[in-house]
Length: 439
Image (cartoon, one colour):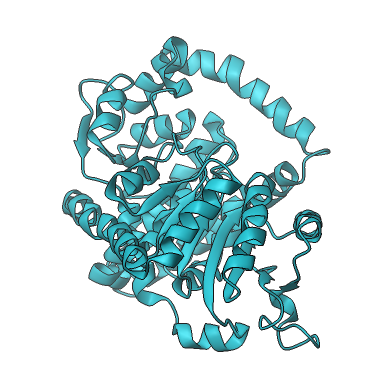
């Protein structure tokens, strides 16, 4: 018997089980995840039964492509593949999407291209085998890295081809530690193919894979996804009218408190130099406590602001007199990037920057803090001339002023950002060539 199978199930899984059960009483995300899994097998059974009924009426059984993602962010890397498969094969295939995290499941449960969205069961041998038996997938596609050993072993035992898509492995990853590397090598040897986002990642992935696993460098499907989204953003004139956005706009997306302090300080100075400049601040989590923190920072700098939810509902909620719009809604950041003259992406003054590709795809200059070591696309954006690293509020003032004072430089920087996206498209088509063999 596989020694890692024994060790994992005798030592690791009992410990994880105790963590999750104990966390149920103290952590809302863990509680949501456990409660959400209570009826998952019944839901899967009902959905698969309806697919089998179609076969009973004379239609051929659809091929089931199962995509698994840790959270919503990783699903973005699978969406171009899902869209391409659905466009090309329609009802001949069914798309099943699983998540480990509650945040991913909650946001994607109504994803229109998925025929089934469900929580990945707890990674026990029994539950993994039960899922495979009920779902009967023809192909399993793991997105980025989230490979749970018992589910991989169960799928491999059922001879289901497993692919790892948009795979990456940072040089400081814990997966490269000797003991962890050994476990991953045992899991990854069951993968039919690994599609790496870069040659450097492919070389590191070789260290935790077996010689039998083929690794191809095809690029990152996120470039395809952000390009598709940039083509489908709603008419920007509607958004301008809704928010009455006058003048030039600096849209700051996915910000945290560490980003907002230097950003708001910088904007106080900039608003004195450029009276027509407006700051559109979109926090990563627009919860009441976070909005209170933002309000305190704005008060410190004596800046007037309004909330997006107040537009059209509260007297005086007008950006003609309030230079700052705090967006207390979700789901509109991409459209707001579309109306920006320049953008700032949060996370760079904390531990890791957020998605710089969305504003880049729209041809906007992108500024961010220095914590970009985990984001290859941010590094490439800087090299391309479309991204600008700033280390503090004074650098923010300086670099934004340079762009606002020189419209030609502003345009050139935005074009450089967009060119990075355009030049790196195509990973989806390369992966699709291999997946089509299973249709």
